[in-house]
Length: 415
Ligand SMILES: C=CC1=C(C)c2cc3[nH]c(cc4nc(cc5[nH]c(cc1n2)c(C)c5CCC(=O)O)C(CCC(=O)O)=C4C)c(C)c3C=C
Ligand SMILES: [Fe+2]
Image 1 (tube, helix red, strand yellow):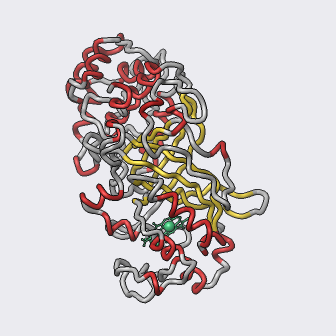
Image 2 (cartoon, protein in one colour; image 1 turned 60 degrees about the vertical axis):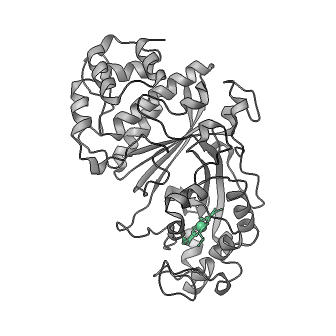
Image 3 (cartoon, helix red, strand yellow; image 1 turned 30 degrees about the horizontal axis):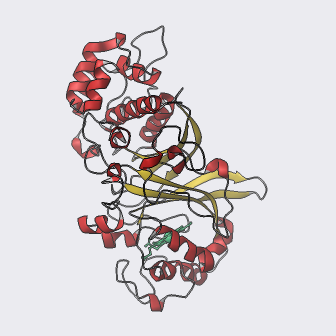
């Protein structure tokens, strides 16, 4: 192990020290793995200055008890990338996570890998975010059941650290899932208010994974609303209203953050449930306003629940149709933290219809108690099923946050 890798794994190096050291070390520093080498080669005094000159307001801090991008107010753009780890050893996987962590640190604080340093080599940075601010960029990592050997072999010797509730979402009666668009060993959710900044980040996570992982699938999403207001989904309804009811530290503890009796590496972590849900826009657009509102049990324009005036007025479930989406969510008596984005995937050439929908993401403390029963209830009698089709699925354990000098998931591999 190189000096720098050793210092990182001991958790003793600040980001500033790391940048300084990188600048000193320069081109000749090979720290294992092509990706790491590329970052070391690229980081220099320019990127140090760039990283530190961005206005703090546009940066979402990466370090802390929890990963950024979970309870962070939603950004406008999202990329969701799923990887299969091809590294054959735990050390190889750790090297990738270190590379990703260092690039996440650099890019979320507005730095880029300097370009053009050696005309005989490809530029270190792909370049498209060179003049752009951090734009509230976040990168959130989750580990799928297969990383722990579920359904296969324990390739990385971490099977004993499987978190209590990590398993694939059970098959649902109305599922129409594409396995090639589902699951994965590791998922990365990249979000930013600028699509180019988000794409630059996900593209370079992919680039850094060369030789250690292959990209299974990637989705891109968007959601747009006035600051402080609830954004609307592609059915034109405000989506995310009920999150407001748990947005306090104790609410997040109850709804989002993993329990204390989980393996230590999940402290401050959460479970991410993913469903790609196609929305049949043409069918929906031919439905009456009454049918549309009955689907959710909320009024389209105001977002208020039936029988209420304002969006955030307390829902009285008894006033909602028995098959309304919100009624069923209330009947489940569970809460989840939703962070969904819309998507469009061009044309469905079989029908000529637009291929679009929702990248449903929710974070929760215990998916077995919160998410899965809710999904089952909705699959059985939700009026929304007339207009939707679930096409992909995944469940991931997102480790707790890290301190400067640590790498994503370090406690999973080193405790
Ligand atoms: C299993 C969980 C859920 C899935 C899958 C899901 C899909 C889905 N939802 C909408 C649109 C809306 N959902 C709304 C509320 C809502 N949805 C869920 C869960 C799932 N949704 C919950 C827990 C709630 C909150 C209910 C409550 O406690 O009030 C709403 C209403 C406004 C809001 O609170 O956000 C809309 C609109 C779509 C279009 C969709 C799949 C395509
Ligand atoms: Fe919903």
